[in-house]
Length: 156
Length: 111
Image (tube, rainbow over all chains, first blue to last red; front, top):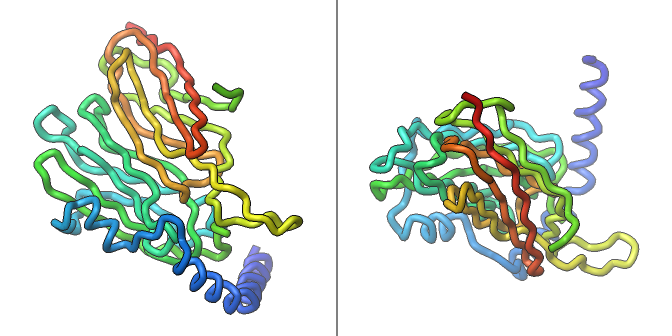
């Protein structure tokens, strides 16, 4: 198994070295002509209405630290909340900070969900931070971020 | 309406009234970003991605989603739901080309 892992890593390094100049050039082009271009800060402002979000341990963001395939990256967001009519999680937003379009999904929850959790699979264009912004019913916003290393990009 | 393949899974399989269960909705969908090129013809593949999903339980909306192109091909949407009597759970989605699809299952709590 060790031998196999070694060859895998060697292959990955060689591939990245060969492709990286082409990727950076393509990224420049995409930045200029992206169809849904919204930077991470602009996206957070759009969600929170300029208020900004606070880092919190109540939000549990589960993403693999190293994703071998950027086309399928499992993401799970869990929020500690009683989910009653007076105190519940309004929405969960998942953001990929360096994708051409930062916003992946907005999930609007209601108290009849019973538990504030959402899981899906996203595409990542390269190594970047995956973030989540959570809106609570009392009008505050919480956030959590985690870096993900991507060996093979999933976009384009 | 289309003949797209989709599936709703509930965990655990047998549940009681009032229990909180895990609901997964899976669908076979290409989720094209509109930025990818066909390797043979060098033409840009037009964008086709799901942009909204709705979970409906006995006529009451429990979860809605706004979706963009960075979700994986054949996406999965997993969340929780409180069982509240017998009825129908239906999931509707629409995509950027105007395609609409609906899938529904019966909810039958035991005991």
